[in-house]
Length: 297
Image (cartoon, rainbow, N blue to C red; front, side, top):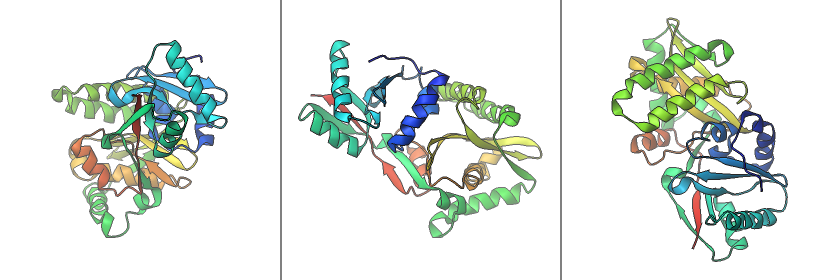
């Protein structure tokens, strides 16, 4: 197996493999693989038509990923075991779904111990529900959007593109400086990741949008496709008074309303943060993609 740090041109072979695999986890979105390459010291390998990754992060962000693609999965898994032995690594897997876990237990009977963390599960939503916010379940969210429209009748939503990348960056700058006093290392990393995402908007095939009020950008979102049916929301920011007056609900709805060809929206994990969990639960996910971490006994 040949391992390399992800580079932008890797998207040309990674995206088709993920698409063909049918996998809908946020970890396989190429934008995430590229933008998180330093944080988790990610390595990628193209092995007999499969995409295999290796993460050197902490806890559940450590180990090989299940091979994505079409072909003999068992042979690919045995090649991973051989690779681990040759590199003197433990046999360890991350981002393992329920279905993948069953295959691993069959190929390596009794060899792996699996654990799951609620904070690692992806929240996946029906796009139409997020776009329409119909019914009692979404009443509060619809009220938040209505409040934003009433408070700022001069608002304008514009899809994200090369022409307004700088405006999205202004929103991120304002959000970051608002959070500087928290000394949050994750916020610092996210700030850098958003800057890099915007610098490589076209190469990463990113989409999104920006909300303007009186011509000034006040909210933005950045997303990309995992496959033709599922879009992954990477970043979403609203700043100042606008965030208090429905900015987040507005950017969420305006963006998904323009994604008519998409069936589902993956809003990624809550990483165990209580406030983030409540926010994601409040949009009533259609499904939770549970992920396991497996390590040799």
